[in-house]
Length: 202
Length: 222
Image 1 (cartoon, each protein chain N blue to C red):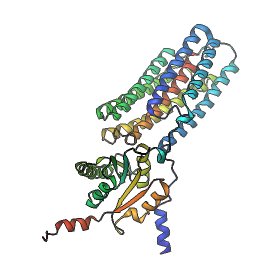
Image 2 (image 1 turned 180 degrees about the vertical axis):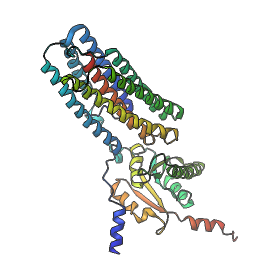
Image 3 (image 1 turned 60 degrees about the horizontal axis):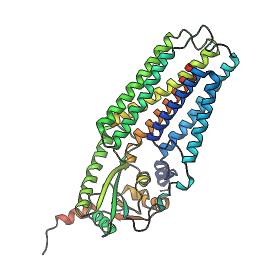
Image 4 (image 1 turned 90 degrees about the vertical axis):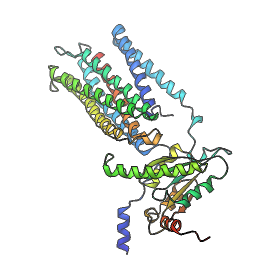
């Protein structure tokens, strides 16, 4: 009997304490984004350190050049994907399933385009991560961001499949599965804007 | 301080604000050099920080779930049920609790298994069955003059209640189960756990569907 009782407890672990103020999944995403900001911060620190150590001379160091306008195109693509993401969320709140699916699909395609352009850019840059601290910090920062876009694409694909299957509704708790990837996607966008201006423009 | 990124819409506004700020920094860098870029970045960052701080008034904190209702407002009842939804005794209990005054009922059927793949056919079937039961229950309540709506919630009834309370400020919770021996929720002490966890009254109603069906089949003696 005691064994059976113990077994029952093994099957049903104690209920985790939860706050009724912030959804646990949303809180998890906030904590994750917080840790990601710190991770990006360490990469930016390394980048600026390399830049300061390089002195007031030319940056990027000769003979390297960065494709500023191609990266600008990529920036426009990624910022546009924030608009389509917001459109998807606005649609699901208005029970517009076609808008939700369309918005998520467009966001996914724009994100994929961004990633493909970045991969193409890597093959034509003419320098590698081994080339000076400049190469290491450049690939480190943009590669870290690319990895985040890849994770975001997976989240978007997941949400897209679920939206096609009609799993979301206009009630706040019924579309949290789109809201959370949306917040993450906007975070990825913000980070890219910072990376672009810092690495390519300044 | 208020979190400026509580929703996707706020995060989107933040993206736009950051894009505009960095556009300004880029323009400053192009025309004024690195010093102008740094000065504009610092001033914009400082301005944004002050703006967020001023916008977050501590007096406007979101009240706790149990203190949101002012006296005289309509009565809100959160009903958590799944297989017992078609039960007549549940419908009667809801109508009794709703009473003659203004009331609003949210029916939640815990049926979304968060541990199973969200696109699985099994999950879809469970959700569809729960949705069907909810629709019938809502139609029956609306026909009886009770304002009711419904949602499919997490398979764990406690989680489903927790999630529902974030958007539906219930005055009481009514949990419907099948009788002892037939109810998994009673085996897991869901009602007692809910009473312990949520600071609003939690009532329990037992729905014996087999008994109700048997009674419905009995011929009228009069």
